Image (tube, rainbow, N blue to C red; front, side):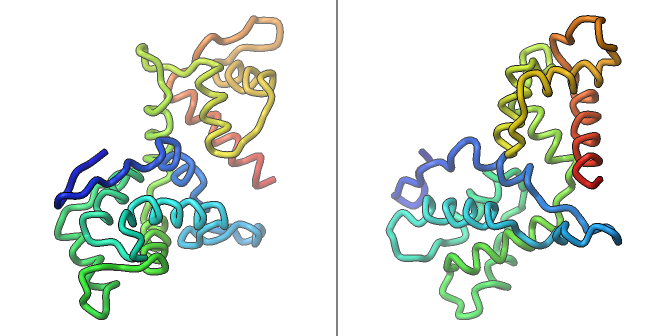
Length: 195
């Protein structure tokens, strides 16, 4: 728990940043109108952002301050400077109360998602689950897949690992993948989703 201004702020759930970050909608392509614009939140993302707000609203007032916003942004993988947080607060807090409500909090994150680099988020996802030798095992990849809502069988995940490692059927199974191979898997999954 983090202590600030004489009160305890509970930490955000550890899987929340990855779940939110990994499910950021991508820019729509001309033929794929079902993909929302990057600055649009999915219902799941909105729910998770609201849950994060509720965790930070320790006094139950329905409002949080700049310090809480800074904690939330950092927990979700953003690296804002204090002056950036002050600007976000002043742009959002039109009544100059020094606090924002849940709707304003959600709006800040909707805007921030549009600014997020998907490659940086994949790098973060890899780092969260990598082993000491900077690779992902099948078990680690399974945790990443579950966290981002991709429920696939162990066999499907192993097949993806084998393909990323350049193994052909009958060559045996890949024991682990590097970050570069992980990125290849994620790009292939995105391409398959667009088909």
